[in-house]
Image (tube, rainbow, N blue to C red; front, top):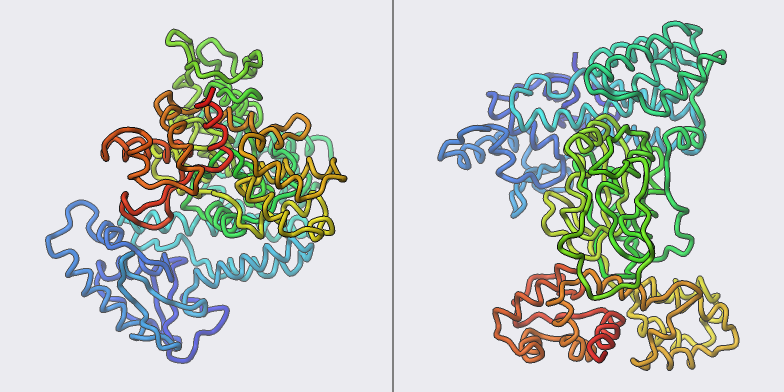
Length: 632
């Protein structure tokens, strides 16, 4: 049976369904979709609606092993058939299927595709739940689920490409089912969810959130013995198949059921505590970065993105952005959100073994001891002053054992958690910690680009816009004081390079020195020999942060940056300027500049431009620190 859309399509429009077998109807009548290869192309385009689908993706979906020489021509034929089925143009007169540099893009409305309607209802239901309107939430989530006719695209899953799209759709359906079941349990109507949860657990035996909801629904329905048996069966399955224990949240629920009567779904705050969420407090003075925050939230909300790198120079606000996003995501990661600093207080890098040990404690994963370092403890280190010396060649750096890495990967594969690894020194450090499969996501913050990691999505941070930097300064010194001398305030933020750390430290200093005129402080910061001395507030020093970034550079990069600091201070430098400052030829200068870009010490234009036409920049405060080191 083909269920009609929840929001009717216009008369004569085609309504497609992916949440089950691929089907299409027009005015209630089924439409023939052509031969199998044509249906594979249509399914792949519909699975990524209103988004360019690369030709290679379509080719892999239709011919996964050995595409013919005529593959592209054949695809054009199949796409033409899709155009004929949809109609060449939409209601707004735009072409339905267009081909551009990113691939083929199919334009379709919510009322014409069940997955778009499903997503809209699910979002509305979750929003109602967040407002506390549980009855509306349950109704909207149920409407979304009523569009689900079975495993998505179950008639085309022998194509690997379509199977991957189908699995993503099914994962979304399962998450919405879990949301709906938990809402019904909280409303005291657990009985309506029991049978459906049992069927889904049989199909997805390792999905813990389904098990928890089933346990709760049975218990609230007065079937305590069955609820406890669900836990015991799952514990034995995990031990037998993966050598793991149920999560702390599920174990806590089991213990509660042993000692109490009927149990409702825990509150949002209780769920967060049960899942062991460990995040520092949200940054109170977070300012600007609206586009970057929107992009990061969208990426982490997508099932296709597992790793996001947030890069930028020291003090650009990478950690603040990652933490802001982690706090806003809330129940998007039901198994917890965790933050781990990869460096010690002195700026030196911890070992992967130490970081994995801390992750194991936070997530309650039984991680074996690694290379003589107990996974349950952090190796103590004495604070040191950053120096130019590298790690001694004979130093022992504990590595993550294969057994420990596999235990961590098994946990990631079974849980939907968000891990923030803050201030990563290089790619090698984190490779063994990133998820190979499963629904968990990782955000890496790093000064360098971590170019050796792939595939990952990258968000690069630079200086704040003038308006954003002034907004941050105003939060710290008060908008009234900012208005007393807006020109001096602008000089202050520009002298700070518009970096959030420096603007923040300057604002904290002014908040204490309330007698100090803004113009006088702007003059102090404008003096290159005094600026870093002025950017100190209590135990927070911009110079120490610059020193930590300097320590990360290779000896060759330090020397080069010291020589480039002079021309960079005058408003940036060109490749010709780099050749002159470094005293080398074009090829060597390009390699040196690109090495500094990779390390996060030099910024390059956002758009494509030839090396000779590009204007390269070094953040002002890093420039000042490099000149100090060069002079010393």
